[in-house]
Image (cartoon, rainbow, N blue to C red; front, side, top):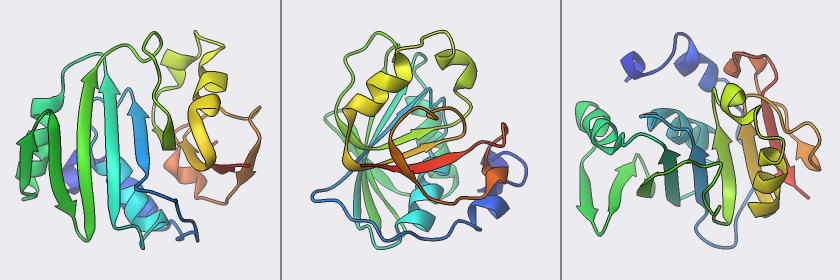
Length: 177
């Protein structure tokens, strides 16, 4: 599995301390600009929310990386089923329903979500000053925001997380108040 992650990311993710957080329903994690990265959000959620048993995962990218994502799952021996544009699988004890959307996140109608996850997306979002406020607006109350840069202006209760998880040394883990 480590071959699919950046250097030292796996070890740094293992240093994440679980948080006491719950959602009223199965949470939806929204991950724009995901590329073919299926493992990083799953590892984060596994460490942050070990009691979570079910997750909806909405991946968005301009390129159709779904076949690569399925190949990665297959390579790490995760069995999955595919039905009605949804892939379902178990990540250890976590039941995951994955939807992949090939679209430009800057022009799409953003869905409401409970968890926002972003990595290496700074360059793309810097050109759109309305992006972070729109993301914050769609994040549910008591929702989690995980980003390796930005979101300094949003009202979030910040939680400590290892800075080494960000190439920019400014990772943010916050709860929307």
